[in-house]
Image (cartoon, rainbow over all chains, first blue to last red; front, side, top):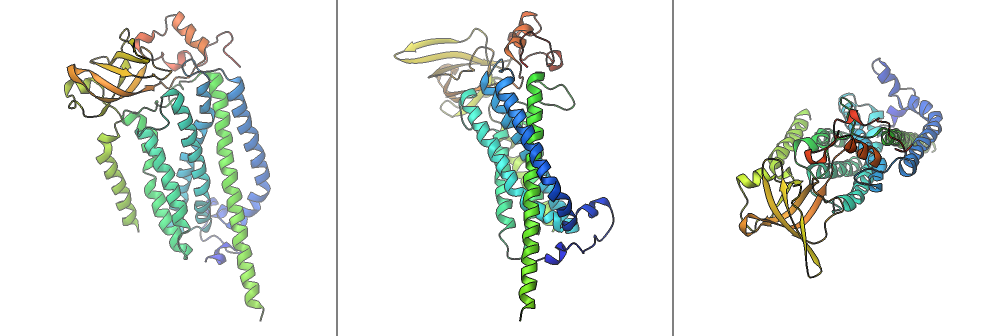
Length: 258
Length: 157
């Protein structure tokens, strides 16, 4: 165990804002008061986006009301991918600098990211049945997102499978970084191969192929989903740090008593 | 450690490259006309339902639909018995699963509708078609910047 690394007294080995923020004790001091605000904003934006999308945005010319599933499906898909990018980034920090906070973040991102990926897969499946005529097809987009889901599950299992946490973090970090190859494949799958899934609607460089009153609720719901993801991960990290600190204190107390 | 990372990443990339051909979900009419899979061999054929090609006949209580799938350069005749998805219509993208039958006709067991990535309200669509900016016979809607903030009466909040 690396409890010693969690004490607030341990200074960062080298300078820079990144190392400054990566101290678990400092993380707790910033995270605790921020969490309620994060939670409130996540809830407000998510509810606003979804209510706007489901009740007030216009129905689609082609798909009618069924297209409203996008206000859940698209944000969930974006967060599932961004979550994996964050996981890969933390794994990189963990491998290169052995940041204890990066290890904790990697351990806590897994279940949350897997949850958003599951929401994406299930909502997509419910959308596919009425529009395409099938709940599931093995095209490149759907298959690569299913692989993303399995990568998350593999990471969740691997990082908890070792008695020696240092080994667990290293093995899981290698898995997460290797799996990052899948991210560009998901994004470009609809361009590289013939897929049943449609191409990308939202584009940062070109114009988005979506009417403005449908775009607004989609973007609001997306910001809401991103904030929800951050809230959940920060809350889990904060709880994990507290848990480790408690364990360390109890162990120290047990050692003192004769 | 770094070596194992490179190896793992390389393995993933290589296996994906190897699967690249089977990752292609469907064949286009052009590919089928150039080199058709043997009759009886299942494959997927995808493209646009050719305008004016759809004919439905009732045999018993099951509708049989014949149509042609085109990609603009070649067309393959298709027959399908069963209920088509809601989005099926002339000019719509579809993916059909089945095998080549006799006389160069594709016999489909399943028809999946493929839709575009353009989202707009019904009245914007009607306005675009009325003004002649979008003729569905010639493919997808015009450049999105032409309509994604177009003012149309009653196009929702």
